[in-house]
Amino acid sequence: MVFIRNGRSQTPRGWFYATILLSVVILYQQSITIIGEYDENTSTIPVTTTTQYNNNNNPLAIPMEKAVALPSVQTEESINRKNLYGGKGDKKHLGGFTDIDTAGISPRAWKWMITTLNIQSIIDVGCGRGISTTWFLMHGMDTLCVEGSHDAKENTMLPDPDTQMIEHDFSRGPWWPEKTYDAVWCVEFLEHVGRNFHKNYLPTFRKAGLIFVTHSINGGWHHVEVHRMGWWKTKMELYGFRYLPELTMELRSLVWNETNDYANKGVAPNGKPIGAPHIHANMLIFYNPMVTALPQHHHLYYEPGCFVSRGKGILTQRDCGIGPIANPEETLLPDEFKPIQLTKEQDVRWFEWVKARVKPYQQEETEKKVVA
Image 1: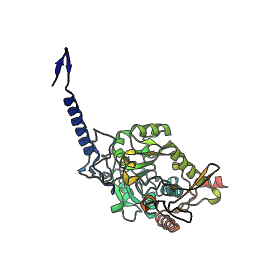
Image 2: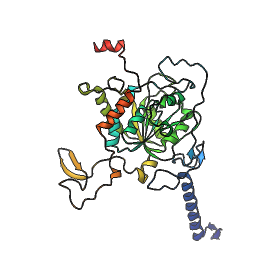
Image 3: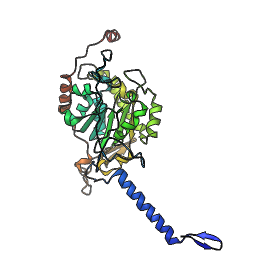
Image 4: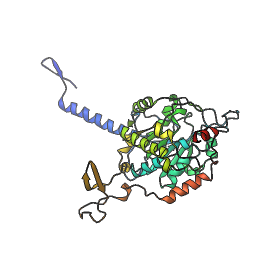
């Protein structure tokens, strides 16, 4: 409806406001369709089953449907993996796992993720035989792993692979878990998946708040995306994730010190000295605000909140409402906002569990010469 006054067209004010209101209603309905209605007491959203990911209206949205896992298609072709990698029966793009890769094992990093970042749930993407997954499980985390190699699943060390492991080949299509998780742990994976298939694992990342990923600058089995840090940083930010430089460097420094602390250097379950270059040299940490902003993930990034002292640039805090100097007006922090309690018994259980399922480390001649 248009009015003509003094030779110029004018729209009635009431009609204008009605149009704006209708647009807001439509946008709200679309947003509910895209991201679902969340219950602040759960990480699960209403789902329907699908093998597709079609969030074209908002590509940064959290996937809402229930994804169907697409296991790897087995082959009878004889593939020479040089006796280094598993993957019997797998196609060439799969099977890059080893018996145990100590370059990606860092209990110090994993404990930091719990005590500092307060991560309580995690998806292990490209979990191989499940060594890191088993650590997360045995230290009290709500854990799920996804792996493309059928041979890796056949040789997994997970206590209950039927409920703890998803077999999915990201070259066949997308997959994501039903609920949101605090974090994704993804070591020795990105370089194995071509960018034409990124669209298939990005939905998995979009169901997590923090994304821990390593990249490779070396050759290897089916390394088809070998790039320096800057490329991956830019690429992940183009996909909508945000880089966390301070946390990245804090974690790298922590793991570097663990690797090079020869006086107190521990050993991996196979007997090889701890060393995690994948992590201290090539790990990046990103966050996904679509998930971290949800109330069920507000416990992330822990630090006591009540004051003790401050001096020489050091701020000392304590848990509120606890201890002899607590004030009566202080509010106690609910337990769900506190980190999982870690014990030495958990460490021993994981170590012995993995040790019984891997081959003992045999020092190579080149290493013996270096030591000598």
